[in-house]
Amino acid sequence: MNTRLRSLTKHIVLITVVLVGGLLLLSACGEPLRERTIEITATEMRFDPDRVEAQTGEQIFIRLRNRGQVAHSFTIELPAGDRTVSADPGVDAILTFRAPAPGEYRFYCRIPGHEAQQGVLVVLP
Image 1 (tube, rainbow, N blue to C red):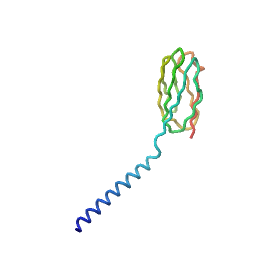
Image 2: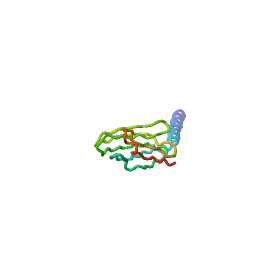
Image 3: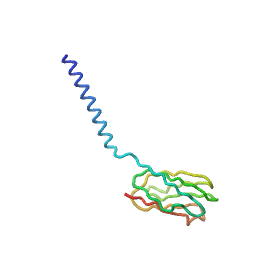
Image 4: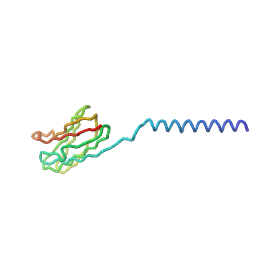
């Protein structure tokens, strides 16, 4: 009987340690990853909208929708380096990145002659 009680006590302690450890691990992970999809339409020499907002740390999905008659690109200047996606007329493309530190980040079309096609991503804390 005494052996059974010790064995049961060991199992209860082990289960308690595992459960508490798991809860501590989950709480240390912080909040779940936030995601934001931003649709930007490219037409003849403009982006709509040309100003978008996100929060630091969000996983951003830029959906570039090319509704123009020519190819367009979307390049954003980020601290870790520029990120670019291109789309032919009538085609959508996706660009993914994590929103950096608060600030303003320029985006533009890299196609020659499209220098006026630009905008800004405002990252909030």
